[in-house]
Each structure stands twice: as C-alpha cells, then as structure tokens.
Length: 125
Image (cartoon, rainbow, N blue to C red):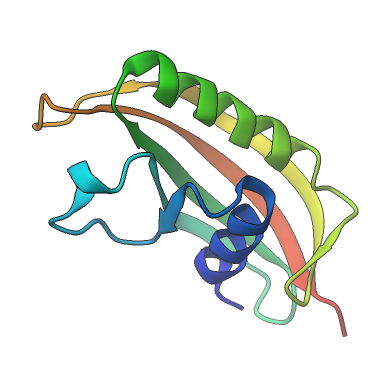
C-alpha cells in the first residue's frame, strides 16, 4: 500500500482542483501555487498488515500566511481520519509528530510551511 498515492488522492478530493498535490516538485512550481507535496519519510510495519508510516506534508504558496492556512487545514483533515477507510486502507490512528511550521526554501518567490505526521493503517481486507 503506497501511503503517498493514498494521501495525494484523498487530499485532492478534500481540497479540490485549485490546489496541486503531488509527491515530487517540478520546474513549474511558481506557476502552480499553491502546491502540496506529500512524501513518506520513514516508518515501520509488522511484516503482515499494519503499516506505521511517517509522512512529511509541505505546502508551497505565494505568502507565508497562505501556506500556513493551508497547512493548518490539512492538519485538521488528517487528524479527523482515524476510523475512516481511504483508498482501500483503514486508518487507525493519526498523530502530529511535528506541527506545521515555516521551513526554509531557496526560492524567495514563494513560502513553504510543513508538518510531519504518523499514520497507522492497514488494508481493508
């Protein structure tokens, strides 16, 4: 089960078409704001069904306020997931490991705010 694919699809449904959500950034980032990047950064599993994953979610926007607002909205959506079935997976627990905060980015034409989350999930069947 690919947690990046799962979260990208789910976040796109929740946030709508006006926001670009992807796993990798590209050269058109300034033309595609706001952009949300979802990236698995670690985790563990039990070798059978349970996946405990760590995910970074970074928001890129024209202003720090816009990035912070969207990052806060995403955090709220994620924390509401436990008990839900998403993309063939049951979400058992979601925890904020590092709350959204301004993160450095080399392009001064945009701002980046990101957080890290842990999710416990397993396939539906």
